[in-house]
Image (cartoon, rainbow, N blue to C red; front, side, top):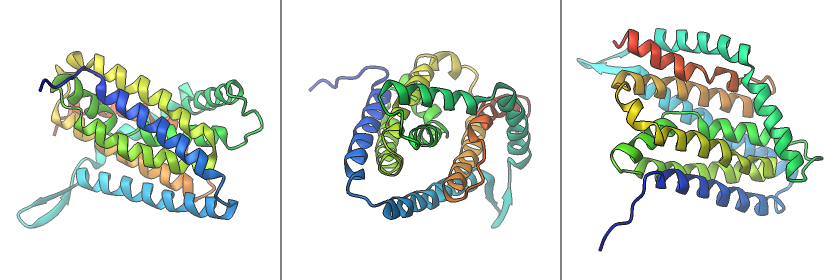
Length: 245
């Protein structure tokens, strides 16, 4: 039996899983009290924190000769600092907010105060991290969408929980996910000529740190402008190109 495959199938599945998960979460929302929604968001906040911690430690800790050492600290620090400066100059967070407000008006949710929070939080959670880059690369170059299929399952659960707590806005994170992943997929051949192992490790390290920041935002009132840290993903690639070790 011939296997049907087309480049980008991983992105299509990932996007579809987000929409389905979001719609199920929105339907389930009506069964949740406000107190239960708050507790649910705290639970997902803790989970996101540990996802970020585990991803960070997996790239930062190295075991050599039965001793634990660290790597990538300077790379992460420089990348996040420069990325924060660039992000603040561009003010990516404000652009996410404007897009969220526009979507809120387009879908008739003008009175939904949680729409923007849900859209921004869910977008950052599903768009930040190595999987959103490496998954499309594997899909395009190795014809292996397994990583994106795995990400689809994770995103469906995460977005369902976000939607149950914040409302319909979280479901619209499917738009930036689709744009980012399909762009990486169709530019993968060009990117592959320059993307090295230190670069992908740097993407994973910095991305995991930003996921940790998202968890902090979900648990505590003081907000970290995570969207304005996104340029750090580009900075870390350039850093790894200059100082690969």
